Image 1 (cartoon, rainbow, N blue to C red):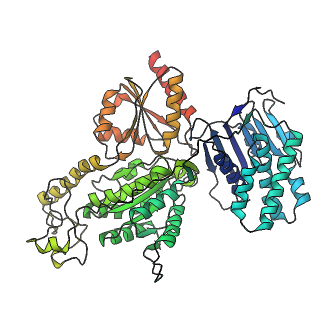
Image 2: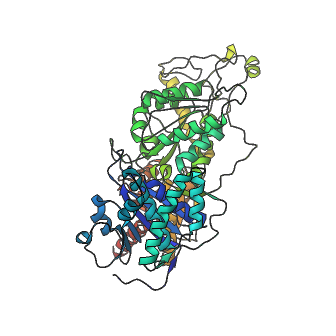
Image 3: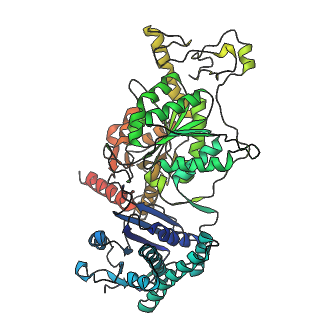
Length: 606
């Protein structure tokens, strides 16, 4: 048995549960995480799952952090090894001095080659085989039994677990009874055979007051509902499908007329992604707020229609829940590999608005902002989330909504306005912000125009005249300048007049914020800017100008954010240093700290 520190760490530990996909472990894992949350402890959950239906290894990682850090920790204090196939690897990934909980119904000693970790053998299969009938039921209850063992080892409040089980099963007394029995089996065995709690433990706090647990896809779907979206078209693709599933569920609850039963929404599963974005553009042209959720491969297929939306100036919202590429890549792993693809999607000269939520809370608010920007600017708008945000469990502040919110429909001419006009010209910029007024079909005969993806002039007429065509393209370029003033501003974390800065986007934020704290503790204070939108505003250029050494942290191989900064700002290229993490797992603070310290040491040596 490895030696462990006598002082007990409170509310600061990481549990990783290794299991087999399709065995029902999600319920047990969620039970542990939700119990910690209800004890008032800041917590986050990361699910590392395969792209098949069942049978391959899956891992669920729970981080409890009294300091409210939400990123992946990069360590494992307690491994629950329930999968023989991944057992050897799971043993290797336990941090020195950590613990391995395993099913000791069968000998495993020949697979354990470490003497610096602590072994906790619990005969889970034997206990459940003796207590429950049926193979499937025994597998399910074995998972609940390890949750009971964890409750004892970590001093998780059993009353909280009981309340959660009652809430889950309601009046199904037989299910509640079997789950409580399984909890007790694991709990009692751990209490009787091990010193409880372990050198790290849970203790009630009040840090989760006014917080919720939610994933980014659900939050984004809720944002679409509140923004007034009524049309969603999509082709199923991991990891974005659950966004449309949630939207359909919300619409079923809130967009059905209580008297007539009429559904006031339209959700369409298209034959492919190209058809889906085409449906969105058609619905938006007709005046609906419409969107599609997809991932990188879907963006590739949508590119032709995205260019049509840009050139004909039709609003559309596209949620890109990024995953590993290229090609099929790793569909159930996370990455930030679509930044350049979305910035310039389609052939020819394009430049698109992108929003970068950092967590589910921002998925909600950015969804609303995306629809307003799309209609205000009359252009497709991308919301670039990723699998880590979209499908994992995050703790966020309760979502707040302004009941006086009114959608920003932009320059949409009314029948009265059209009646009083001499003539309507679709692409004529009257007030100099590069945005022309639009009309909706059926509003007034004067508002009719012919929509075309081919060359057109500012009057909406077909043209192959070089000057007329270039005039339209130049106006579209100026629209990007307007977009930069309307999009969400970057979030700055300035700790002083330092010449070192860090820049990141999206889900990298949690790890970078934690890294900034560690660097400061270690004597390297830095300033930090999280970019929330593209095109970049003046604040981005200001941050670049104010720092001599800048680390650009992103989750892809080719430094796409860094490349975009070089292309779209006046930054001196030598200032930018890429910190790249792209193995498909979420970024963690230790990786950022180590990479920055190494680059600073190399610079000092040079």
